[in-house]
Length: 172
Picture 1 (cartoon, rainbow, N blue to C red):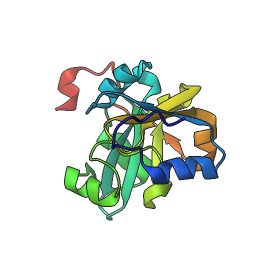
Picture 2: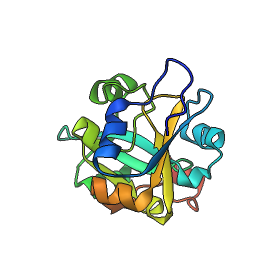
Picture 3: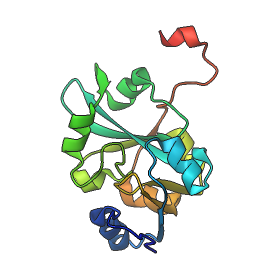
Picture 4: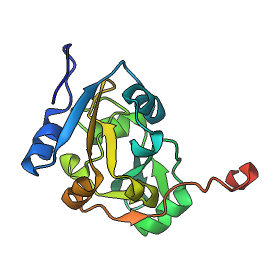
């Protein structure tokens, strides 16, 4: 159900993609937010059930979307291993905007098919019955059954998040 009340709209390609795969979804409008954790709070959902999308590029120029729980941070060493790459770096905002047309920077939906991009999700995402993620704007999110999303995207899972129990000096 689309509850938008202003000119800002969720990404239509995302809504069409979900409908085309018979995935039940809810669209929620909220005050503008600019972090995944902030969007989860605005949505009133557990941040661990809000999927954050992180764009990376490998040394062989593959752009990949990594999906993590909102409070988690990507471990680039783990991403290198999961992607079979020598090097992986975060995409810059202009690079992310270029590969995700029709989306506001930082509001890319967790559906790589929309942009012809592969995805990998952190194992923690698999623990949620439902997930929410940005719908292409800083004012809209969608909520879907995680299993239906997983089947439709064929997303592989890997260990991608920084371990919480590591000492801070280990990241330097």
